[in-house]
Length: 90
Image (cartoon, rainbow, N blue to C red):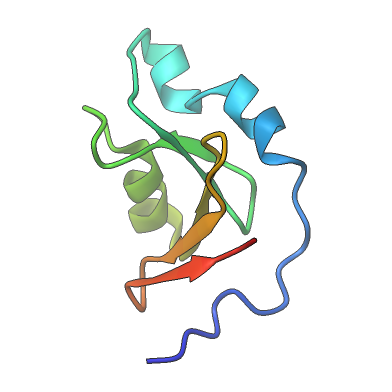
């Protein structure tokens, strides 16, 4: 299955900037996270599904922004929630 959701995205800052910010909701709650993901449409940074609060997926369900990227060091993949496709962003 081909995924067209990664086409025509505006460039975001380097992933290390998003990593340094941390999960926006967890920071407000005083909670922790496992890994960080960034929405490729608006730049929102949320925690992964291995984290207790799963804020990246919650962001998708709330606003329907379908594509994220890992902002973990040395990772260069993206994920489309709609098509359930992983993409190499290197």
